[in-house]
Image (cartoon, rainbow, N blue to C red; front, top):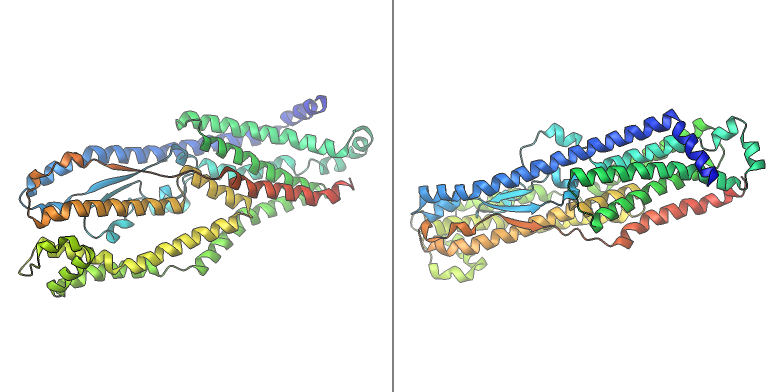
Length: 448
């Protein structure tokens, strides 16, 4: 304990250590504030749509009471992805994809990927969230604090004294690294405590898992640093090698894997789906109305009782056209969804051996901002859209007046994202990577 206390005093007295800890704490606080602003924008959008929807329906009923088909051409229904507050720590896909979908009962594919109007330069640069600070910047701090733990002793000529006086040379090195790790853990816990207050987080399992995984991730970088410094090279060599490893793990590998996954699973279906949806709807203006209605009845045989009106314009034929936009693009859409799921699956498989990628994907999953969770939300929105169609189609075809419908029942509906993960499975890749670094260090330890 006395040795650890001396190492702690020595470490804290270092101006470089104090500045590094202060900088990482400030960056962490800034990232939490940015995450809070992101959540506030989402909550403002939700509050606005909740107050707007009732007024919207009242206005549409007043304008189009006698023409329900025209009213539903304009009427929009809100379906809200209820964001987990942890999304303020790991923004993931939530800054690209809208939290609120406002949809009409027209063709769904044309509305599915509608996004909020956001400055594209902001989207390109991305948001600084706490997950970025943990995954990208904490490893740099590990390197800064630890690259010369052993080489400094050698270069100043004190290592011979250590080998004589210390009970264990290995214990001496581990003690110095342990003090630095505890300081980083302290900074990390402070940041999570600040995040809890600022983002109004609850002390639930997901928050504790995010903190625990962050600690394991920092531990991995200390084991990696330990493996490199025990070769007893110069401080400059250690720093250069560690920064090179950081660059490969954090920048080059994720970029290369992204390029590989994009090449292996190209998505031309994204364009073909849009074309099929547009053709499926627009060409019906020049197609025999009877053929369009017959296709519509193949999809909804329960509506055959409304007959085959083909003279002039009518809403049955019009919404049958809209339905064909979705039906004709169904195969392409299913292929696109399959490709996106394959990309996600492949990325998860590769990330299981790369700690920084694994931790990012797990953070996104815990926060409800992963790509797979966004796809689940879109599928749920599709089901909600179908429910609206089945409710309103009979009323449109029977030419009911809008005032006969209780519009107050159509309040914004919420989707709850599933953020459950397997705790053991989320830990295994990082634990294995740390143990591997320790095992390959053993031969060098014996030569200390």
